[in-house]
Amino acid sequence: MRHTAASYNRHPAGTTLTELLIAIVLAGLVVGAITQVFQSQRKAYALQEQVAGMTQQAQAALEIITREVRSAGTNRNWAAFTPVTYISATQFELRSDRNDDGNTNAPGELTIYVCDAANRRITRNAGSGAETLAENIDTCTPFIAGFTSTGQSTTDSNAMRQIRLTVTTRTAIPDLTYQSNGGYRTYTLTSLITLRN
View 1 (cartoon, helix red, strand yellow):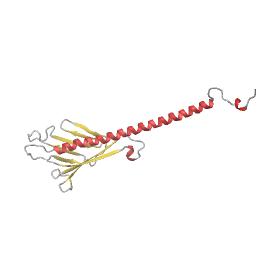
View 2: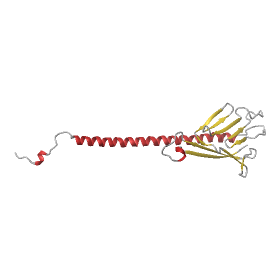
View 3: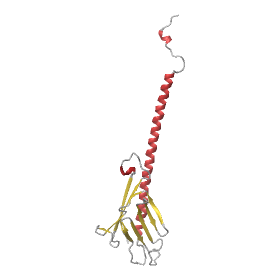
View 4: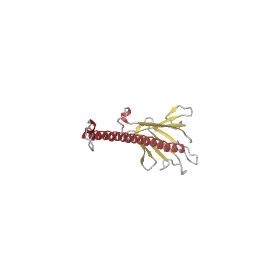
């Protein structure tokens, strides 16, 4: 019987140590790539969730404040009082006489809004104590600005015919990959409201 060179070079059944090591390295690379993609997706989702929460919070706060500003001054007896009182660039009061008793200091008829920069929040006090309306406020200046009927800036509550509210919120946790603003992403929303009363 004659043997050829090819008959001696056949691999026995099974795999060699080299083949096994190559397979382990390739599997490790695939698992590493999948893990990296998963972590990247998880970070992107967390960031999207924070940005959405920040945006929704600013929109909800301004919607509540706008609704209450538009109803300020409500009374059926045509009593004379100032519906929106400018206190400072970070605080204002809303008054109404809903029960027609002539007293606009009663709970539910006097509402005080404060943009508290030190605690990064906007509070609303309708007579039963201050409650937090929005958190993670980035800046409070100016929270409120008043304008006359001709569009001139004013702090005189009796001359105000429009007010501009500005809310700037930020993410709750800094993003280490974001270079601006200390890593906090921000969202600014402005509303110009014409006073009805």
